[in-house]
Image (cartoon, rainbow, N blue to C red):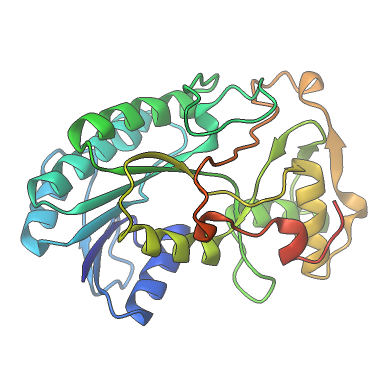
Length: 276
């Protein structure tokens, strides 16, 4: 099977590419800068048509879109329009399409969310992801739209950006406050990558929540990843959202109405052997 991964040099994209290659996929992808990637197309997602041409040339059986930016002046061009172009390009070559979205499409005011809940974002990034979801669904009606949460790795692998933030704060190299009242469902990146590859062959369309089984506060999550890597949590600073003057969703606890056991991804407490 031929698989095209946008953002193949990113954290999730890189893990996906490795697992796909190990499982016999013919993998190609897009990168923003070459960085030594041999089987990749250097694509500027701000320029319409570049990604479409690359996908048309490769003619994949499936496309997984992981590329995005979280903020900045190109948020709409890349996170929204880039996602819609990827979906349309996949549809044009009759490829299975999986779009990676975020739990940030929700406001965080409900006890929990499942796939039938309508997005109600309160941040610019969440709004961009919500608009992208709608555009993807219109451009490729058979696409799977996967909402996920904070990514992390096992202690023996390079850390994710979320882990680096906690590790840097614990070592005193950066200032950061981790909120006790901000709840997420972190997911092990390897398990998410494996689930996405299985999803390619599943008859699924529309939203799907792929998150870790355990809801945990951002402060507890920071403590967990620091402890797992042998660090000292005494420097980690906790707080509450109201004291920060930031607009952030408080309870992004996602649950899935789909019973397929492959979607049951382990919680961070089980993976890192911690108590909640």
